[in-house]
Image: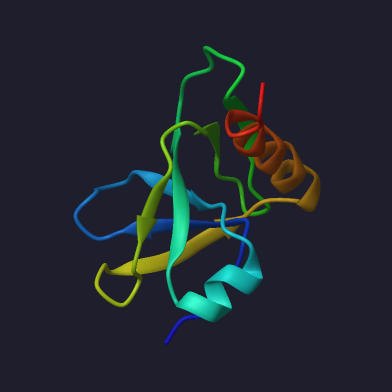
Length: 102
């Protein structure tokens, strides 16, 4: 079985060339075997849309408000790239900001 980590860019069977970013903490992935993802698209329109550049050349914008939980044992997932830790921090801050108290 493939080991997945926070910051991995993955493809999912049935979604064509669309890429997704794993945003769950590594401890969550290890404990549950599932993870949260956000889609990566080629748009930049809002404060929850964070531009990234993967270490292997994948680029795009993470759509932070479109979080989904998936089970990689049910979906055909494969790693295609990963992002730097500084980008993971920006994305985590954006996601956390959606759930903070007013």
